[in-house]
Length: 381
Length: 201
Image (cartoon, rainbow over all chains, first blue to last red):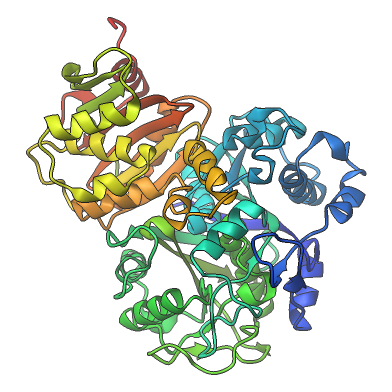
């Protein structure tokens, strides 16, 4: 079967405008999570990863008129622009655009700065496609917090189905009053920067970001490359807002994926977890990883760097996993203190180099959704 | 490997009517509100599933349509859900935004994602299967077919429910169809379009 590859990528976050700037910040232990006091819903302040719109506009004014676009549209357009800058010869005729977002421009709800249809996720996709004159109708994936990785799976599957030759996947979500107040109403927001898998974790931190990646069958032949192997999703069929106590859906997505690809757990060199730092999510992941025989695999969560960026998170983490594989580099699970889940995991406590070939990315979300994805390095010799 | 795929049964909820395979099952009375029409379907079909009353209207539409689709059958546990709509959860987003002025409601907030409906259907029928929720301006038969065929080819599903469940400003449009290796019609764009929008209506 013809494989697709993870080609050029871009991350736009408080840690930097571009993947290189983000990797640099991660290597030096930087975090997007800062203390903010500007929300009427969290009167005592909160930690979050925010991108000032002024900084976005400074970058955006090189390519368009900032006032014509919502904050999220600009973030996502900037990410796609970086992909095109890296691929000036990309044949746009046959390139698909796959959008991943949970809430789109929800910050505009109840405001009248833009036409009302800008709240629709298909309109967000249309605005981005029109900006780059992408002719193929864009596809929008909105499947809670697995969306970013599910959009990569969708890109692969739609290329396989012959709908596109290549696809640009772009993901983004904002920290809005809507989302902040919602997670606060669940008492899910941590008073301190989130601490995934730690004994002193008390909930999530939110973050905003966008990311984009080009996926397609034509990778450079004289360099190492990262291929998309396969991905599976599975629903917990248990609860709409709480994870399964047995990690059922996550376990099933991993075990089906490994079985379908004849891979033993021992072959996996690195596991990029979801790790939101809520009590129940992290415990659920630990149970699922243990059931799948993965408790010894080096694992991290990137939420300590970015906060939970919702529809962007699993794409950002897929891109970082790609770079971990390419550079043989394991990144610290930031803010980890000591094991706070019932099954010990092999949490990455400091940056280190290790020969990496096969990585597993997982994600879980509201609605009981779970996803597991395999990425593999093909070494150029 | 490519197997032939067929459409088994289909359900529509539109213009105050609930239809199964083109035949009216429940019809509302004039000027009936959606919430009351939904309750009427629940009662008429003698459903006993108290979780129904906790759901938002979007999930109620998807849940009720799936009950009618799976009438008298136990769906295969490897039945994937490939769903889509135009307005995502915007109706419930607005409802939640209203609670923000007063006391943000976690029980409303949880429904501000369109894929929650997939969770509700998965819980009801105990489906631990492949799920995806896509958003497009209009019903897009080609997208359902491309994504579903790949799931079959990769042997990730034995059957699939394709669903369009849209709700915006109280306008609703629901179409579910059950896809598998046996059935009444070929699983192609033309048949999907015909079933989604029957010309005799």
